[in-house]
Image 1 (spheres, rainbow, N blue to C red):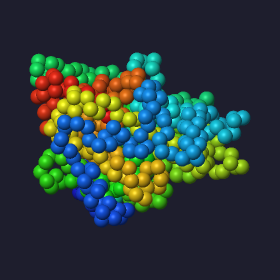
Image 2: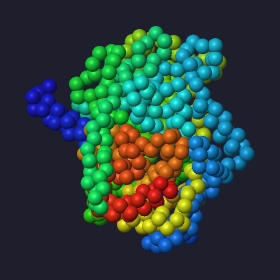
Image 3: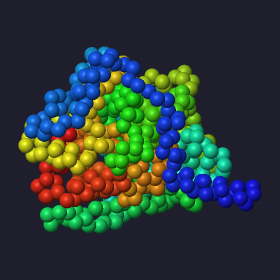
Image 4: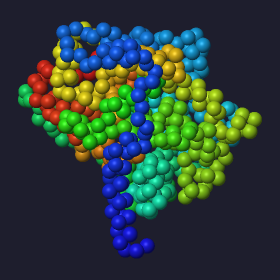
Length: 512
């Protein structure tokens, strides 16, 4: 390789590793789409009902049911995130509860007498879906050195080092370059006979933020160290990102939002000058190989719930599916002893550890976990907080409402007015929240706008109120104060509010 080409490649790789592909990747890789599921009359109705409100004297019509007809009106207790869509048929409910059993199923290492349950690992993060998504809710950082980080994991990748890797990332043929030895994710558990890859060790840095009205907030940031590495040090320049498990509610409704309604809000070059430059995530659908819109995960790196479920089976539990068929799970080529361990494939049950039928049932379960009914929508403080939420500019990213597709795959989710408070786009959230690890078109500072529905029930369901991708925020206000980048102006408006206004804003978000 000539010196000039080598320098150019190094510069391109360094830039790409920090920023990801160009901001207009979505416009060049995704076809232009329009809502083809609606009549002209329906389009007018949808436009009217989803228009942002400017009247905060009373709750909006249907606002109390954020999931439309799917909304659960069950008690807001520890099981608030675990109920089926309220409008499922009897057959649908039966399928949901079978899927729930598989979601909670504890997998074991092969070979085992429980042939339908073996194949775990060899490396893994959890033995069941439910162990990460506790009560179908939000994960958390370990509370002390003896607390296993079961609902938190570490993503790994390295900058591209060859022209082939650089081209693959630029064309989105790969979302990231895995760390050569440990792969794309640290697995901190292993089957008998193998050591775990390593262990997460966290410490915290804190700093104070002065707020108007004489108040002070203390923010904390995790400091990550990986200890007890089993296969030697990681490659130089390894990028690591802590992630807690996302809540499961409302996923099927988000999948039923027409891509045109998401792409219509994308503005990667901030053409309207409002300071918000949301970009659509572009990913490959593992089922078809086509480049499609990404919507799920902290960086919108999965296109469908089925793909997300298969990815979790493979990377979190080391279980093969038709989408990820390797029986040795996430063991890399550098981990020969791991690849030599027995798998759980049973020829009479198919050629993967998780059959298509099982994957479909878990997918159906995840698609139909209902969003809980809103609380206190007419409370004066909640309404005042809603006005402040709008006034601070939060709906620019946390889009309040959509109407789902008339032709959604699941009949229960068709043509529903929903209130998720997300645009499902990627936004630069500033250096404070940056993990420095790009994924696809998302740079190290980009994160998908998380839905806000159900956020106020986190403590009731999971016994904590830790928010953001790594659980650093202890409640809504801390999460807001970590906002930077495109959200910096909104953050400053919150900082400048009176204490009473901030209380009302938090009360509104916690009512969602």
